[in-house]
Image 1: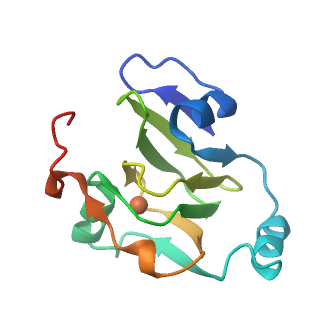
Image 2: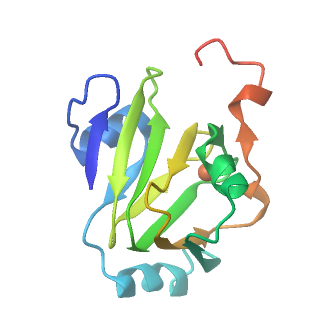
Length: 147
Ligand SMILES: [Fe+2]
């Protein structure tokens, strides 16, 4: 996992990321630990998502558009490389490059976007509930002054 400020490429630690965005990101997490979170009731359900050459560009375009959710976004990466950009409390982009065995929790209502440069990713999505899963696109909100 690599974490850095997008505008100047300054590296950040995981704890700096958490301070500046609320995002919790951990590396080298075993799949069993993730499954324990589900069986212990911390999450209600999970599914597996695959992105490959058959994934429509339209779908990827939705992920890449800045948005938030009213529920947290929790992902465990099984393979491939992906990028999350998350908007810090001070309104700067912070980039998180993730790979297999990375576990990330994006808080509810934090604006973010997601890219898969190689179109070759497998990940688990963990849900507390399904209601909060609808994306709220930033351009559709009234607060676009900082875009
Ligand atoms: Fe999202």
